[in-house]
Length: 142
Image (cartoon, rainbow, N blue to C red; front, side, top):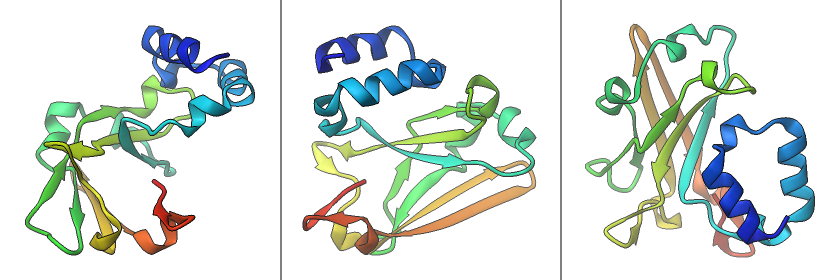
């Protein structure tokens, strides 16, 4: 599948709705497509009890879900979109964050660490990502 066809297919059917065969066809036949930057950062959560993630919607999560830079904690990167586990075949809760704001990257290697924060009802989640571990050929690869 060419990158153009892959993009058109993506626009027709959300990635979360692809079956395994469709995803494998994309991976096998479109190395150029895989080299293109993703439009957003995705953080996926999987845990034994996924119900809290099924019962929330984007508007509820926006106020309590964000990324923080270790360098500049005053700047919150707001949640762009959310896909609950019940809508996905893989049963992940997927949080999407923008890669750029005002034509500037939201995350840079100089940030050192990015902190993911979300809250669903009584459950609070916090994860820290060390950006130095995400460098390939001298470039941040997220």
